[in-house]
Image (cartoon, one colour):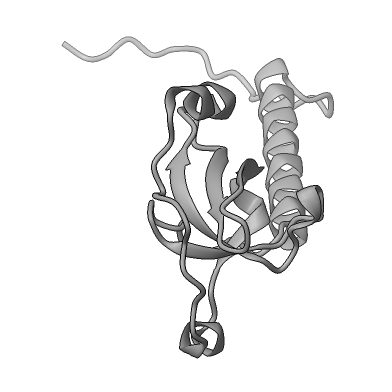
Length: 134
């Protein structure tokens, strides 16, 4: 049996107005481009990140201006529970204080060649110091 012939219809030209789905797609693409641009800008302006945080027990140089200890050496006693703060025991007077992880750095090879003073106390924290840290 032959197929039934249908009446030929002319195809209408597309309207110049965008359809809703095309408009939504264009808006999503614009948002993703703006987000990528903002992320690239933030990455370019970010501080160079150090490889890792210093190990517990390692000797670090204090770079913050707090406590008048800039440039002094300290030993990492412990980290806070959230990992943002570090407990330090300084070499020059065995003082305990808490600093941000960003405010300490590991020693350079030239600094490692210098002779260290003796640490007058153990680099362990008592219960009061743990409460201060956390």
